Length: 152
Figure (cartoon, rainbow, N blue to C red):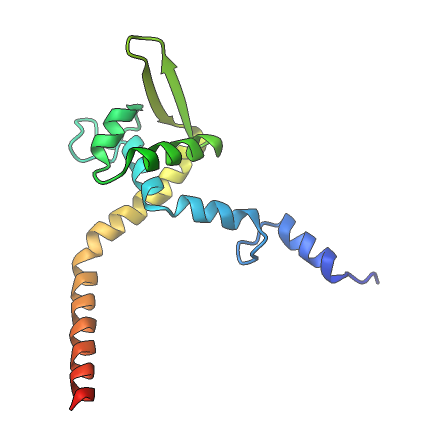
């Protein structure tokens, strides 16, 4: 029976993409895809914007459309996030030589598969926000009561 060294065990775990290990590349991917802007960009490109007539149908969006939809995102953050999504193969960028140049972004097949996951998280957050706010207020009130009791 062959024995396995610690280094071989680490190499095997890395090959199996175990996100619980700090060296696993899937942990880096999880870090990227759990970013709020990634979630919102995927949902926007996936057609989840309620104001769209064809809501729920993935469609390409121009940079300016994404910028308007994602209230609060800086130009730098939107650009960086779109570049990282393109690098990971989740989004395609199409440049049309018009005056001015038209740039559109669209989910790839891989991006659409991830969109299915993140749209559920976004929907959960929207559906349970009232419960979370009540819990936060309760904890804050409990914390104030504890600190006031400690002062006396």
